[in-house]
Amino acid sequence: MDLRREAVRLRDELKETLQVPATIRWGGLKELTVTVDGRAVFSRRQAGRAPQPGEITRLVQSLR
Image (cartoon, rainbow, N blue to C red; front, top):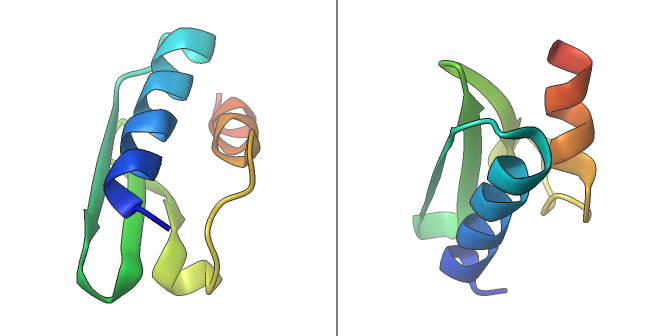
């Protein structure tokens, strides 16, 4: 999995569907963390897996 490509896809998904600015960090050890409004919404390290399509959008919607 190309984490940079996944990070860009997630950022664009959140911006287009929810008009929410998100910070998405990726890096070594296949780390991918999505932060919205200063809160971590998803961490690949904690979940032990990559997010499913639409999962991040659903998580953000549940916070609002």
